[in-house]
Length: 115
Length: 115
Figure 1 (cartoon, chains in turn yellow, red):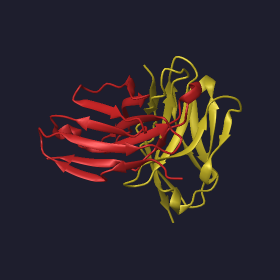
Figure 2: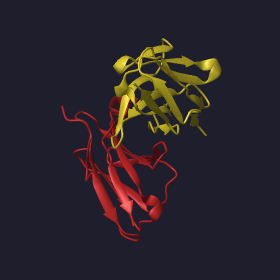
Figure 3: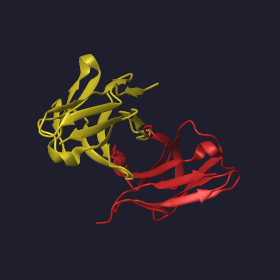
Figure 4: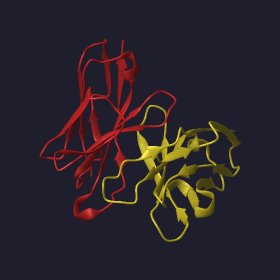
């Protein structure tokens, strides 16, 4: 069965510092990969996605993620964090077939930003 | 262009009652998925509807049922509510028409509290 692990439950960074959130997945083949962000009391907003091709994908709000097949990882990065980036971040995987596109989510990483 | 909308935003029920949650997909989308997000956890897939039929189902009991209408909107019904059903229920829409593997866009959620 597919699974997603986000090893860091909480991360605190200073405003202006760089950020990397880790995501590892377990899947039989290369899945579709996503990062979503959730602000308190809100739904999920898509940051970026990887389907195929270039393994470095750019997203909204200055985020990027790199797919590394050999490490089964899809880590999210941002060069300079803003206070408004404080939120919960979820990595998700989806199947590479047409039977449906259910997503399996990791447990999330809560990002706090220090002024 | 309206995004995914859900109603109600909040709901309080007592154990044993039944509840119906509603979702309207993003314009142009034909597929609706439902997720349950317990406090402090990532969302878990409940089921997905396409062409008014349940296409995929996660590991949820039969107390959870759904429906999709011809206009693609959807309902999630939960019978015999348990305390453990308290959660944020998220609806996501996507487009699978033409065999696409559409990205899922999420609504703001319905927060259900079971007392």
